Length: 158
Image (cartoon, rainbow, N blue to C red; front, side):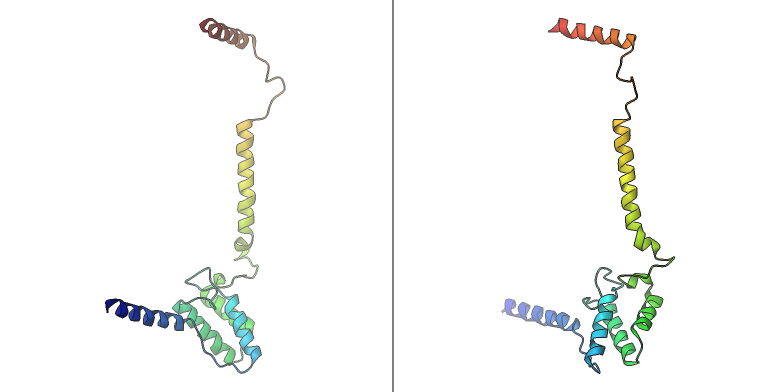
C-alpha cells in the first residue's frame, strides 16, 4: 500500500514538472511561431547558463518565453526583442553576442588563452632542454681530471 501511495505522489509530482516545460501559445500564423522558436533558441537562460530558454525549465526562462510571446503580439521586430533582452540581462543572454568593445574578450579570449598556453609551454620546454652553445659539450681540464678520478674509483670497487 505504501508503495502505491509513493508511486502516486511521485507520478503526480513528475506530471507537474513535465507540464511546466510546455508552453501553449496561440500564434497568429506559422511565421510568428517560427520567429518565436528562433528567438527562444537564440537566447540563453540567465539561470541555466548553458541552455537556451526554449529548452530550460527554469522559472525565469518561462518568464522570458512569455515576454517574447507578448512582444511578438505587440508587433516588435526580432532585433527589438533581442535588444530588450540584452538591455535587461546583458550580452550574456545571447549565445552569439555582437562583436563590440564590451564583448571582444568573449570572442577572442579563448584564442588568446590558447596561444598564451602554447607560448608558456614552448618557454618551459626550451628552458628545460636549454639551447646548446657551441663548444659546451667539451670538458675543461679540471672536469676531465675529476671524471677520471670518479671512473677509477668505480672500476676499483668492481
